[in-house]
Image (cartoon, rainbow, N blue to C red; front, side, top):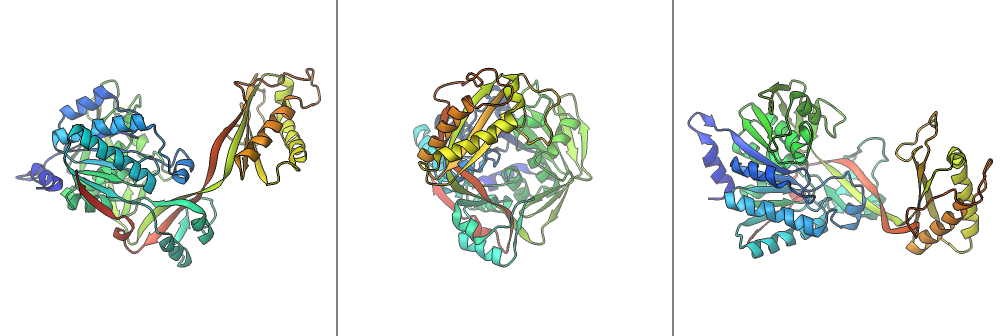
Length: 466
């Protein structure tokens, strides 16, 4: 009997489905799993364990480069902890968005760690992997057919964007996970996936109402982040018919109606609708009720199947090599004049490097304390007493980017401005060299929704026995 059939027999009661216990081990695997809370979650005998590994939040670098975002040692340790626990309890383990970005190199890196852990720990199970790389010709055809829409105020996707992208992935929903489980998987490692799919696929297969199941998945995807004070400890959800409860495995974190309702809005621009590949979760009738000081019960969410399936696609393209110039400033006159100083220095640097740096380059200034995080339309009423200056240079080669950064540093250090008292020392460098070459720079080349006729061909499932 495979894992999903075993679960069916466990939750099938005389009068219907029994409560389903779902353990969210980590909001993002690879950054450590708090041990005491995870151990408590295992003592509650969950029916399956889930964890997400990825996000688009770290920016386009990881998708573009194919590198995983977390350290190999920490990632391996987290995977070992979850694999040994799941096999000890003989319950499914579901992991989404392998290696942070979920493209083929990320998935392969994580799968190799899983195989090595299984061999070292003498673990035996059926492992499913699900690819998420979008075939470029499929994406181009969808563009030509008018089936691709931008998410937000960004340009329409073009065939050139597709060709420039080093990797393009699509976010799979519950369909791909369910296919993997039906194929006999005990452990599922997926490429780029919707966070909710990790936790909603199994309840949907077992016959639990998809509205509450999907809402539960939305809440537990980041583990105890939905509690007060929020954290990353393991979270146990219990799905019971049309409602579910959430319970942090750390006794100092409490799920209140307010904290849980707030997390329903997490990463959503619409407070009442969560759009998934297979449909829409409606939260306008959701209810949040305190069970006790530690737990909240949630009910009332509705699921509407999609008339047309859609897949969010993400792509990243290399734009060049990056170098940074980093400095602090505590000179009040220089701080007040920084908006004029930086463009003036850039003009000088472009003139000085025109014969040595033959290629074009881009320069971006950020002054933390004034406009480093957000480009405020007006300066603060009172200038900060110190600021941090970051000048980013992107050029075709690392040598060109470094050349510009070093010249920029020198002329920013000695730039003359009205009211200057000192001819040097207007900047403070936190370390030397103050120019740092960081490597390749990427941009998001695709952040769009693509309408598709079928989901299965886009997310291939492979099964192997370990």
